Image (tube, helix red, strand yellow):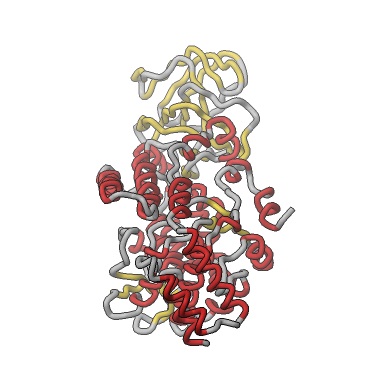
Length: 523
């Protein structure tokens, strides 16, 4: 197997289905020229502006100036740093991106921006993902931060509106990189994103985690406020922002957990940036942010975050069992049941998956409602039962096995509760954690994952086809010849003049002229 194939083989199935082959031969001569132009500009500009590890990190991770990097070569180099990379198409679901990162795997968008968007693109591309993220991984402490930040993002709870915003951003990035997209299509995509953003009922944990990641790993500066260095991938991979970000035109703020409350616009250059004292400062801020999450707080707080989100999340019970499903409602107890917990009963919507340590217990997911009762007590495996919990909750019914309960009746402080007669029942003394997504993503994906839901209507492939067709065969031939002349070191002024004359047939293609002018200067 190739290094990339080996990396992919080690991924769980629910992540492998988002991975694509790089298809290196599909890059056009102009694609390689785009890469070379950007990397040449960035290396020249960033030598004194980027974190000191940047330049050595380029070679340490298999990235060179002349051509788009091969993921196989990158994997050979990254493996020495305890990392790996895989190819993906455009934006992938945040939970997939963060889980991969927590495992030390970079998700690299295999496509490359067009020459029209050479200074900045809102779409993920191989310039951003490889030349942006990979070099700073050469600093091991920062690499540890990326993994830790990925885990926090993975554990954060997302809302149903977050999914709508993700789909809108993904759509906009595809449309903006499509050379055939009409002004009406662009306007519609921008309006869709605006409407999706306006639909948010509140700012979710996942949104705040994304903002923290954005202002650090993507757009972070490090050092003193007066003379910081660049380490964020978005800045390291954008000619325009790399040139602008250290000027007085961009406001510099000291990094703190408040950055998670600062929104950003992915389609525009950023008006302000946050400066970390050093890479240890990143861990301090991340730890402070992490302490605010339902994943760490559990109890009433975690239940309310999950209920408000209306998404699939998981509860971690006192004995280590994990219950995955949607939290619908909670019933308050007359008094505190456990520290940070005044809830007597939680109702969850199926399907419900039971697991321990992130691994399913082997049973089929429960498709009906589920209840979690709080207090000291245990449900028998089989037979009639009656539980009286310290919360004032009384439960009685028939245990059919595996937590399934029939003819359930419930009372709280003498008042009858409306509970499902047939349900899955869990009893626990307290609730240590409530975390985002299913506890066992692989098993959940095996039962409920829908590859078609992500791929259907996928505009990336059509946009790539249009980008390839937009390159005239004669223009492609000129790009190939220019590259050959550079590689051979035998560029003759007469032939360069002829190529320059031929290039006038393609007035909109400034990049070829720039390539020829560079060779003329050398000849």
